[in-house]
Length: 294
Image (cartoon, rainbow, N blue to C red; front, side, top):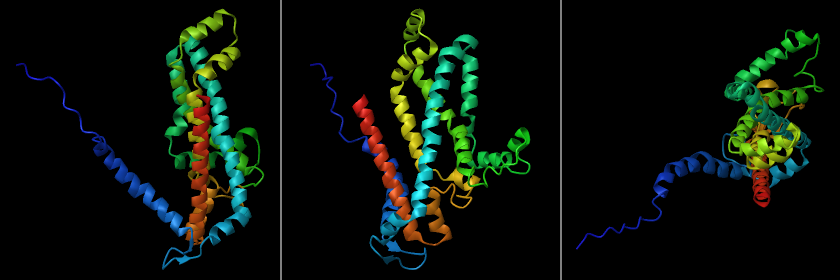
């Protein structure tokens, strides 16, 4: 009698063994500190001694805090600079590199330009911030020297936020370009060839072929860049420290100030908790919108 060749059923749930290290790391590094942060937000605590329970007082104070709402308004401006503008410019640049530069000058030229756009993402934000601080210095900065100006770009409340937004567009632009060019690799070249034979202009090919084909990538870029803008901290810390005055204050840096400079840990935790809740709601809305559009 021939031996049976039937396969033994694999035990279900075996993959959990491979997920266990990540689960332990997630619990210890993210989940537990987040729950502790929520608990501390209901207390008055200076960082030493025993926290004193005060209920929702920190959140009531937050609702009335004009500095928080002003910082949140600055965060919305940074969403424009870090998500909306880079997405729009990245779409145009990626389509131009894919549909024009690569065909006219070769794929190596397009790849070199793509790498050049992505280079700011490789630089540490501290290094990029220091370099931009030198370039924008009111006395010896390259920007003022080249254009013959005497503007205190980062020290004048009228220019500071717009200057930070411009720097963040430069820093963030390479990410959507790379993502969109990757998405364009899976599009059918016959679509572009047929549209070109029919006499469609580059703009019409971009609007009717490129954007519909990479719509999933557009959602990914908008979501990840919006989250990055909401929790932005390092560029503000390096460039302006929230100043001058509160001209570039954002919730993440406002939370940091209460944590470490004012020793008001409970209030800083409340700010961080509200910011995390906003990020979670924005993520949920993006995912629902993507599901509805797919």
